[in-house]
Length: 155
Image (cartoon, rainbow, N blue to C red; front, top):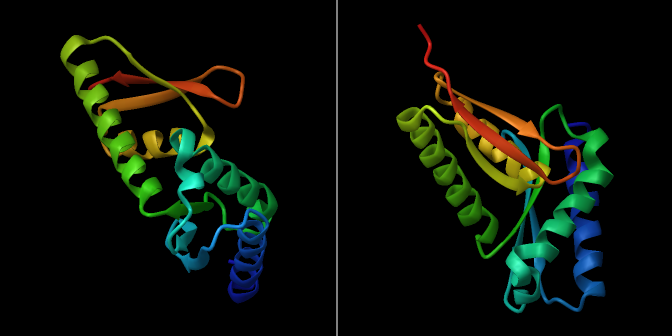
């Protein structure tokens, strides 16, 4: 990442300011990982972030990605999590994608998943990419798109 320490410091400062403005007693912990800049929110009292299926957490993550996108290496994202909410939802989404790929194999029919935001679509695409006989395609023209999972056996 371009000047890693500076990016991490600025991301930390931005998130800390947002949390303070929201009167949430949480502390951001910024960790650089192989495919993302992960920001874990430590502390108690941040349940507001998890209401409506994590809508506020999604919004914060979206804003951070918009702000820091040009400074992140290609295909890197900012991921924001509180109380492992995002991690458990990501695992659940990966498992759903694998189940739908198996169903596509059994039935021969494409399976649809969504509508999903860009972050969730990336999780699905990466999970399905692990299987050489399965493929994914995003359809739709809005921010929220549906993924079609198909089974195309290799020869």
